[in-house]
Image (cartoon, rainbow, N blue to C red; front, side, top):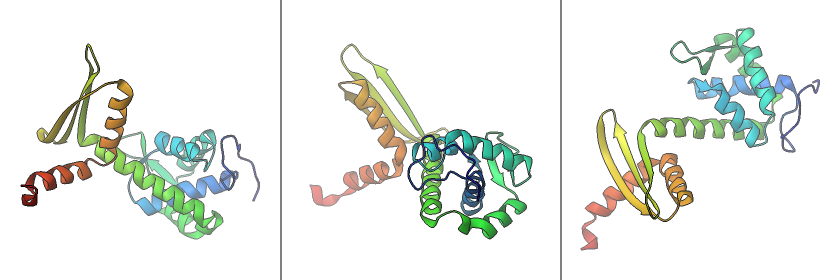
Length: 186
């Protein structure tokens, strides 16, 4: 396989072949079975050292041009696999090392979960005279299921709380419910 991709920012063991990058994208879209945002996936694969950002972005465009993936009809930032792309993913997946496929799949699943959680949360950070106020809420449509307001001493801590909350608000919600309904704490 010809090595024709830039390896800038790619970790040892990452992909340096344009063909492998294209196959990996098809594999991810085929196995996840839902549309993914090209830019976020490109950034994620780059930051994790799997492939160069520009090569991944270019691979998305080439796959789209060749009819292996298409833009989602409801959101042009999202791409989904075509039957032709699924055939490529199934047929050529072993061209990409298993460890790379597994890592990329796991990253994509976490990315999609985070996108979903971000839509289900509302976070408001306000600077105060001293410190910051942060309100984290879990919402479903117009219904606020739970909200927590906190005072924190600095913006860095507020941002850290925001990130942890968005990562999995269901854990926080379940934990609060468990603590508030635990009769053994009396």
